[in-house]
Length: 94
Ligand SMILES: [Zn+2]
Image 1: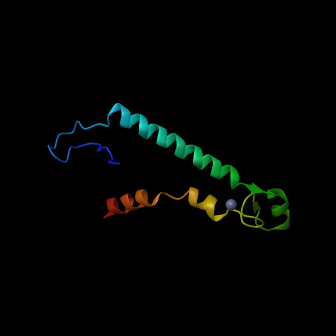
Image 2: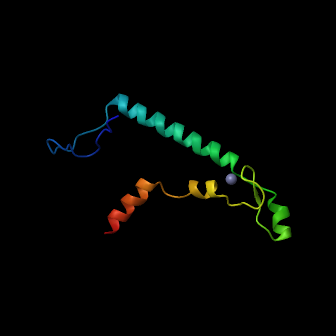
Image 3: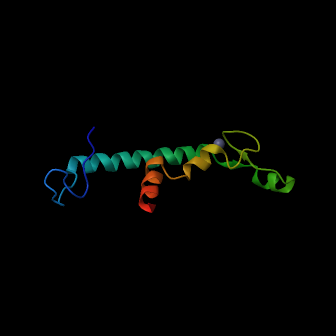
């Protein structure tokens, strides 16, 4: 799939390039599905036994990963910037 170019056209240099209505709708649906997938992952990887763990002075459990795994690697990864986004930020700093 060819990504629609935002901003300037690489061929003519004009700045009026926008996604077609079909491409916009496709991107909107992809974003909606991605948000739903993140929500499902967050629901699966949630802390359990928080009060008991706090009283015992240990880490809470992850509902999916198991005992004493909170915050688990999956939950932590959901809060990290995507690799492409992190790379773009790195490039801006140079
Ligand atoms: Zn987990």
